[in-house]
Length: 279
Image 1 (cartoon, rainbow, N blue to C red):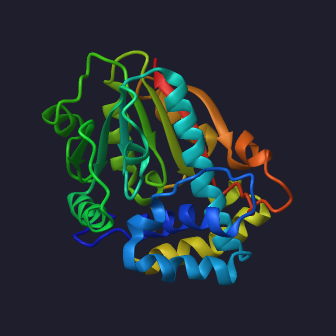
Image 2: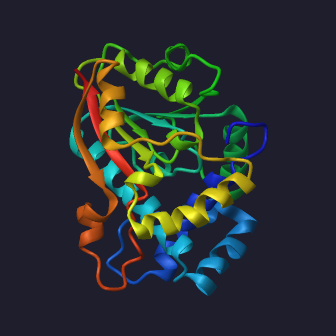
């Protein structure tokens, strides 16, 4: 995610979104029908794992995690009325390519290497880049986020919706702090949906079991989890940067997850969402 190599984590998340429509029974939490085409020649292999071993905790848990967080963030975005959307660590997210405009300007923020890889995948899949989308190349560990956004036309005098999903746990504490400080400078009325990972002492047994699979796998891919937060610690971190918490959301409590049938993928409380605004 942060080196010159394409993000394996982004690929796994995209595969999970695609597999949700193939492996899991309806009602579906989230429908991303561009995820599989974007994976290109890897789609068959990656979806094959889910078809063969879809009931395994790590695969079912990943499908639940990535679909639930995307559904929650997009529902809030579309209900907010905000016309600037910043996707931090966008990876292979497809929101902009599934929308018919709707007056929302989208800024996809990610490492330049990941963005160049995504552009190649989009071209190979025949997916056009919409005119309302701007790519913003940022290394969260080194670059000034707001300087890069400003250089690409982001309007700091207008509120924005920001999603930061599946990213903070891969960053150092310093980079997480710097990113939140940057968001605190956004216009009043802005909203952030951030996903954070729970430390061992805050996990239930099922979440701890999934962590036993997920964390070593991430480290093996060269993308280890580096930061963990409790609801209390992330609330304090946000408050220290002038941000007000609206709510903490457990994945199993999301309406889209609760509405699923008994065939629901396993929904664990390994990562939570926090919704915050500039105070």
